[in-house]
Amino acid sequence: MNFNATLIGQMITFVVFVWFCMKYIWPPLMAALEERNARISEGLAAAQRGQQDLEEAQAKVGESINDAKQQAQEIINQAQKRANEIVDEAKDAARDEADKIKVAATADIDQQVNSAREHLRKEVSVIALAGAEQILKREVDANAHAAVLDDLVAQI
Amino acid sequence: MAGSYANSGEYIKHHLTNLTYGQKADGSWGIAHGADEIKEMGFWSINLDSMLFSIGLGMFFLWLFHKAAKKASTDAPTGLQNFIEMIVEFIDDSVRGSFSGKNPLVAPLAMTIFIWVFLMNFMDLIPVDLIPWLAGLLGVPYLKVVPSTDPNITFGMSLTVFALVIYYSIKMKGAGGFFAELAFHPFPKFMMPINLVLEGVTLIAKPVSLALRLFGNLYAGEMIFILIALMYSGGWILGISGGFLQLGWAIFHILIITLQAFIFMTLTIVYLDMASQTDH
Image 1: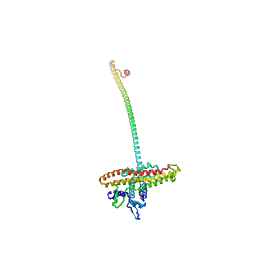
Image 2: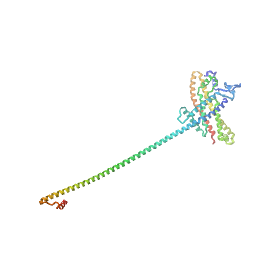
Image 3: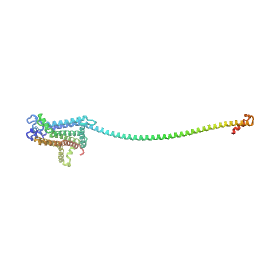
Image 4: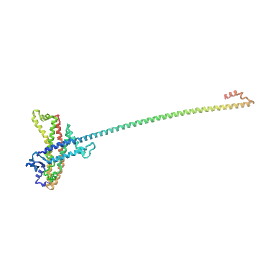
């Protein structure tokens, strides 16, 4: 083991190398590594957030679908109710109309019956007059006996 | 390739000799030939091969990681980028696990140590004769390609770490606090000299063990590679079994070089953590 100036040379070299490493190699590498670590953990957190958001959105979608279903059911129920009401109303209206028609028809019939009766009465009075004329063999003044005839007609 | 040497002893010796530049005994400057000349050069000489490979590998490390640092972004990393970031995260984890305080120096220091020591150790896996042989063709007489088998290199690093330990000890605890830690522990105050000796040894043992552990492991590993390489000149049966041995030892050595780099790094972090802890 011979010690010589190589010892000093090596010490100087060592110091210079460590200085260079400390100044130009270690800091940028460490900075890059730490930055990448941060980026990766950020990415992972973002992924987790995304997952959570997705789950929330899915839950919301389910809720919305349920709401929509309920609303649809309500609308259908209302529509059915309304339809029933309309049918009932239509039935009522039809019944009323039918009643009205029946009443009108009845009135018409009554009127016709009355007019027929009137007509018959007149015919009968004429026939009665003719009969009486023939029986009495003389002319009966229709005008003179109008009051009696009207009386008769009213009695029929 | 050991065939070109007079005997295996010379082969081994040649492989363990650094390419040293310094002032020779006659006053001229030049490259030393053999261990004796290196000894004569004294302290003010330099191991060119150790410095060359150590700086070269360090530059390679810085270039590679700097390239990754420039490209670093928050996008998904690919290929090399991914590999570099994996190492950075591994080191960051190690530092967070062992170092309790906050100090921007520790992590880059740990990374430099880990990668640099690993790369220097890795030179051990290149066949022992390959690079020295190529260099020999260029006229370079000696070449030790594994810088961490040179105690100058390992001590250079461990002493720098030691200086940081002292610096942070004094900075965090104050000079008095640091002295108190050395003097009033583990025995009561009146036994201060004994405490100082005990704690002093503990303190000195840190850089020495750090450097010697790495040096010893790699030196021994290199030695075994050299011994295995010697078998290639012992006929074809020895040569083939040497090939298998080399393969086995290289695979095992992958573990050792990584482990040694990791131990150096971890102990550095732990020592600095101990130096930075104020509540003691």
